[in-house]
Length: 79
Image 1 (tube, rainbow, N blue to C red):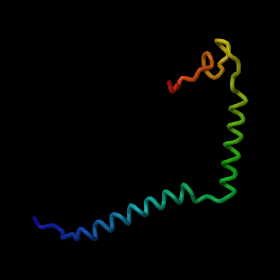
Image 2: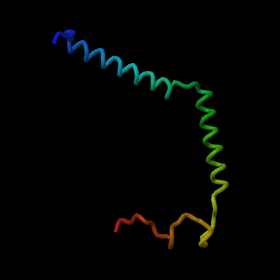
Image 3: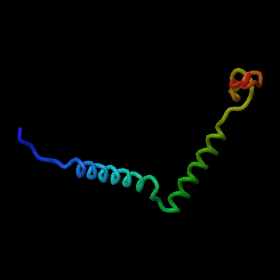
Image 4: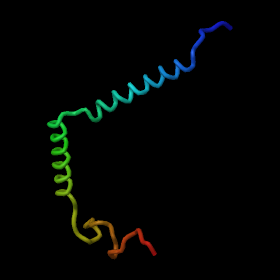
């Protein structure tokens, strides 16, 4: 049963550094964007929201859609 001798303190530090590096790489991808890219994404989202709102059905009839709120009372009541 002869194995490598491992200093646990050093092993834990190495493991923590590797985890921190992985998180840093994820954050660079997630948050490391240029201002122009952020603005482009915001514009795309706004355009998509406007398009989606334009396709929204309106009306209160059975086939009209509406907001699904029958009788005007909220489903979440504090009574």
